[in-house]
Length: 473
Image 1 (cartoon, rainbow, N blue to C red):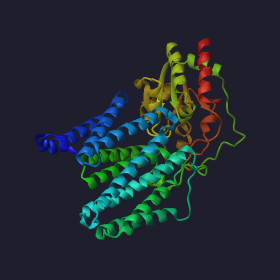
Image 2 (image 1 turned 135 degrees about the horizontal axis):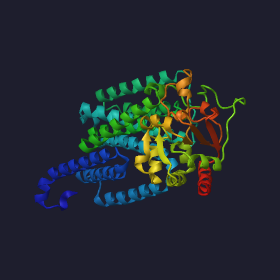
Image 3 (image 1 turned 60 degrees about the vertical axis):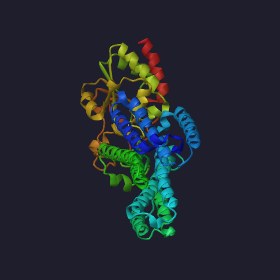
Image 4 (image 1 turned 30 degrees about the vertical axis):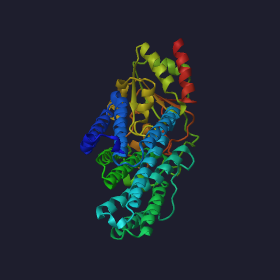
């Protein structure tokens, strides 16, 4: 493909390509660094995408994989599909989209390994380390592929969000995992045995299904983060397969970032990764304190006018958003309410729990879309001390992350999970459609406290009603 270049350029072309790889790696790393702050996240995302784009283009030219006409056609078609998907996907569907991306990433890594295995013609010509990386890339990539699509199905509702288990499932999964690793070793010893290669592929695809099916909907944020890590590790393995440093580095960064985030998420839920993967927690069977069916319990219902009056005469209001806010697409109306309160001299802050929503950072992105100032967003550790001096807390579509059971009932499935200390505030108002339990499937005693009021209904409709009431206060 480089035949059209002058001989003088062709002589230094390998060095130029390596320099471009170095440039792409640098841009990618700088982009990831900028993702650390909401203020620079947008440009960071664009920089990381640019780095990967440069890497993909130079790889295709360098490896002379396909003609430049097909490369340009692929860029145009792929960009059109990506732009359309990004424009059309709703904020509530972002977790599903990320799950799909993880699956495609894992599948692509497995296909790269498969392609390299086929390309050489005689696998016996491959070095042992190459065969090991091919086997591991196929194993991790295939698990990521099917596991991500199962996660997508659970989030989308195509598959039950409850844990799907059978007796001896953990032992069976462990047996399959060990068996697949043995097969990778066998492939390295006897690469001409095509049956072993296809067995690794098939069992890994099955493992992806069997490892995600037993995980309940409440744990999906952790699973998505873990699958993101898997896709990075698989990409890094694929980089070793085709000897591409950019893929190795970027895959390792994504894999490490995913593992760190998974660890943070597990700590935020006070659970081990093993408990998430093998605990079968998060479905309707995780009853703990049982759903809200006790008719002896009473709640205090409120109205839009009452909420508007309470907030108007408050000094400080903290908003705790949850997935219900995203479902209702109420972030813009919420911003209107906050603006009106600030115009009346009320201090407004937002408290974000690490597992709020269905994906890490989901709430931050949602609020950023509504132009909520970054300096009003506070992590759980930052905002918890503030609740004692807060007049009103508006809890919108959040349930498990404000459930006092996590502190008071040792037998509860969420016992020990750090929560937002909203009960310390003078008044809490919960926006909810009903008293039904959240993802964890357990009742919330906060609903029945004297200091709490329930505002039933769709979050967007409720906030719009409050906006109108604020105009009259």
